[in-house]
Length: 91
Image (cartoon, rainbow, N blue to C red):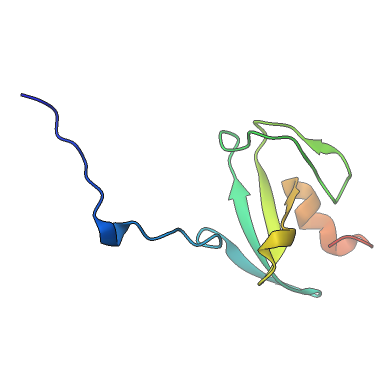
């Protein structure tokens, strides 16, 4: 007996919205969408705008962008994102 193959139905082939797994957060500078990135999913090196240090592959972090402006999303260390309202010049 051969194994069953899963077949994708045409109505299931909807594209996933980029903000589907993002939480909305209100801050003094507007509404931000924030998505957690697991260590397994972090495969590239990014530079955190909060501390200007690298976020190495394999390190869990967050991605944040202003609502409606996904093209300008940035990768942040979680503590840097949490402290960003207490710093000046970021965001």
